[in-house]
Image (cartoon, rainbow, N blue to C red; front, side, top):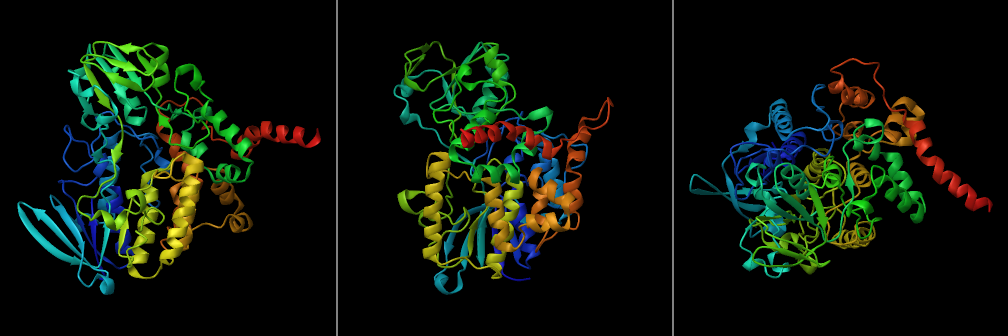
Length: 531
């Protein structure tokens, strides 16, 4: 075995990192503070310190063909959008198939990660762990942080005057588990993200009254997209990314807003984002519009002030006799075992090259896996991140100079302000980001070459879903089954719904779908040209 690598966390990022280290001949040791793998997807009936926490009813927002490990498709009979228990079943099967469990030390807490005195020469780290009350220290050649970013709740109580005198219950969505305790209650949910909308829609079936307070609004998307296909298999494509990157901004923005408003007009529901053209992560919820239509959920602006029993909103309206306030206000980024100066740069923000490597470290021996967020799924993203990081640690890939990395970070900050409206976001464009990482390790598919050598595959790769299999199609880590997986991805997507035969399978006609969608902008451009 080669260099020793400490991996912190055995969720999907940690498992991807173990696997990729083994592929590169490195020696991984994974430390997991709980007694099982899965991380975020491992449900517990109570929130555990230092671990991500989900509620019982959580389903995936990404479909199975878009969120698998690139060489390990989900079973045919798994539904497209899965309950958390199905994801945990899949993760466990992957770990066993790849023989990863023997590299994990369970119930082991990492208390500190520090540079060794000779770090400037060796790049090595002292890692101190605790298990059963005993501390151990070990030296590692590299560290891969895979502990996620849904662990430490952001609870901005100071932003809400009067909250201290509020007499009802007040807690973060991290502590929510099931709806029964809210039967007959009056509940205020603060935050219009995925958790806030899920919780509000769920408890509205038994609660007396549910209000969501939103400061800036949000796009709400359905998992069911055009003609009933999974949203991401139609929305996350290379062709759509190509158009977004090359169309004039005015047309691109108009098209994006049209897509977001395809199911219902957000203005009519009080959900319209303040700046609808920004590509901030939308909410995925199939129930919320119907719950609003039925009057079971009401949308209100930001809370101006709390009293002992009520909330006064910025529009002057009041929600009286509140029993509970649920803060669905996201999470803070923290790695308490690591000195902040290692990964935080200007303005005390996490500063990482490509969301992975600290640019000022001097040695490329620390990587943060799974820190970025996009419309694409986490599993294929972390797999590609870990592949590149493992090669950098091994020394077969090198990072740019410190100056070039900082310059690249500055450019990305400018682009993020344009796309997402703020510089400190961890959001990124999925297809562009994946292609960039793949190019570093020689795994990016060449679309022109595919059209010349394998037109059938090229059409699926370019016009169809940008599925994970594309990133193990060529280059190091190539999977022999990738081509067939791409050509059969619609079969696996439709298979679990064929429980009653009512005709042949109806797969989308990719080219004609795009021709139909582009008809209006093409006519618009033609009119402008010939006027």
